[in-house]
Image 1 (cartoon, rainbow, N blue to C red):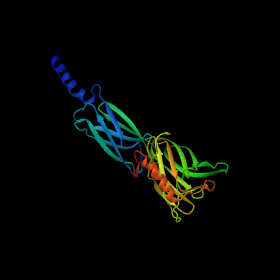
Image 2: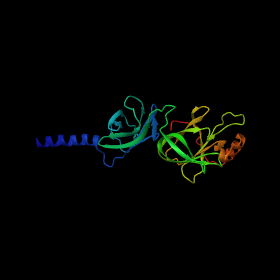
Image 3: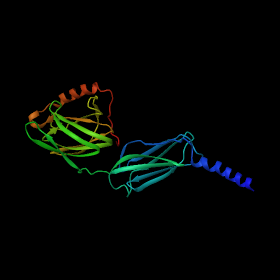
Image 4: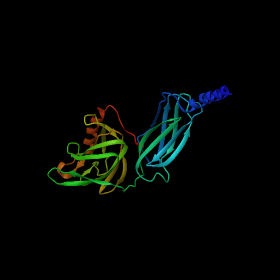
Length: 274
């Protein structure tokens, strides 16, 4: 009888333990971006070093302490798993950090990303005071997501603005540019595109990037610049910057920027969600 009990316990230990614990197990999880806006598709992928047959991965998304989504995902034979979520719904009602909690057997891991609600065209959170050398200051209304705006200064050589940011995730910078202080105009008086150059460090070669045109009227132009985690400097180049600094023709702007782009090793042209 004692041998029978011992045999039952031994069999149970063999069949149950592997399903919940694997020595030296490693579990990793990542997302395809470091920040998302309302309505974006979030792709969560991961890898498991040692597969436990028949055991799924549990993925939970938490906003503060509130669970906003959950999924059970099967693991492939090579230990990989993937699941998409939509950043939308009644629980996705404010900006913040979303925690991804992944559990497999008796191990778990976490990852995070920033979440931003959709903004309205007129939404501007703050004003930045820009100094005009020997002539006072002017304000630039702005919204910054994914980092902190450190400084904005006039650049009389580029007829534009030099901006320093401290980014901690993908995001965007929206600026309302007053036409009395900075603009980009063609010879016939119609709007010319600004040139936006971005670099990841103070000494890195700047890379041209596209931007979104949010609003334009006779008084100001509002633009939104997509940012990547690690971006450091932004150069906005136009054809006009405050009367004291003067104006250049659009043709000269094109020639100058063409020479800049010619020495750029890579490009960030093309707008995506972060």
